Length: 357
Ligand code: 5AD
Ligand code: FES
Picture 1 (cartoon, rainbow, N blue to C red):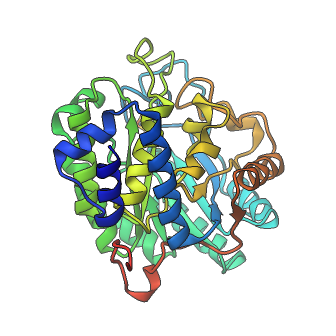
Picture 2 (cartoon, helix red, strand yellow):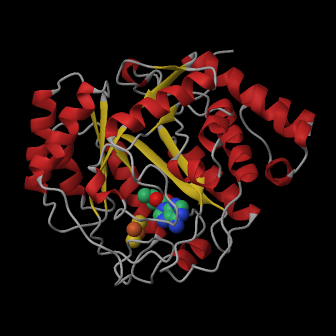
C-alpha cells in the first residue's frame, strides 16, 4: 500500500487496479500515510488556511424526487419553507459581520426562485458586499438561466454529479432524471466561467468500488475547482430509510485520494461528515480538506432543511456555528482564512491541477 500511496503522491494518478486496492484497504498504517501525504499537499497549495463558506438554505421545496433525499417531493411529511429575499439578504449581512466572504445560496429546485428574483438577490449581495463571492447550489437549470445568473455576478456553482455511472445514477434517481443532463449542466457551467463544484455521496446504496473509480475518472475529465463528498446518511422518510450509511473510514480515504489527485481543489469537510462522527470534520481537515461551510440559515428553518437524519448544527445561531467551527479548525492545527478563497491559480489563468514539483 505504501508504494501505491507514494505513487499517487508523486504523480497524482493511479491505475484502476491500484485505486481499487487503496479505496478498499482497512490498513491503519495506510490510512496514516495517506493522511500525512494529503496534508503535505494541501499545505503546499494552501498552507494552513481553511476557508469558511456561509451556507444559506433558501428553500426546502424541491420538484425532484432523488431517492436518498429527505426533501424529495414524494416526502409528504417534509416541512416546506422558503426564505424571502429580505431574509436572505439579512443572513448575508449577518454573515459578513461574522467574517464570511463567500455566501452559498443552496436549495431544492423551487420554481419560486425565478431568474429575475435570483438575479436581483445576487446583484444586491454583490453591491452590499463587493469583496464577497456568491456561490449558487440550486440544482439543474437551463443554460440561459445559468448565463443570466452568472451575468448578475454569481461566481461559483455547486452541483454534485451524485454518481458518474449511468447504472448507479439510475438506481438513486427517478426515471425522469439523467446523468447525461447532469453532466451537460456541469460542462455548461464551466463554459460560462463559473468555478464549478461536483461530487458524490460515499457509501450510497448499491455503490461499489468500481462506481467510485468512475466518479474519480469523471472528476479528472471535468477538472472542477471544488469537490464535495460526504457520507450517505439514511433519511427515515425515503425509500432508502433502512439502507446502511457511508463510513468515516471510506470517506476519509476518498478525501485523501482526492487531495492527491487534485492538489489545488477546494475540498470541504462536510456537514454529513460531522454528522456521522463528532470529530469527522476535524479528521477531514487533517486529511486534505480546506473548506468548511457553517450554517447561516435562520434557526427557525434549519430543522426543515432536512436532507438526512440527525443533521448537526440545526439548533445553533449563526454566530455559534461560526465560533464552533473556528475552534475546531484551530484545534486541528489550521487557521481561518480571511479572504474569499478562490481555487489556487484560478485567476491567473492557471487551471492546471498538477503540483509544481
Ligand atoms: N445523505 C447524505 N447526503 C445527501 N444529500 C442529499 N441527501 C443526502 C443523504 N441522505 C446530498 C446530495 C446533494 C447535497 C445537497 O446533499 O449529494 O447534492
Ligand atoms: Fe434531489 Fe433533494 S430531491 S437533492
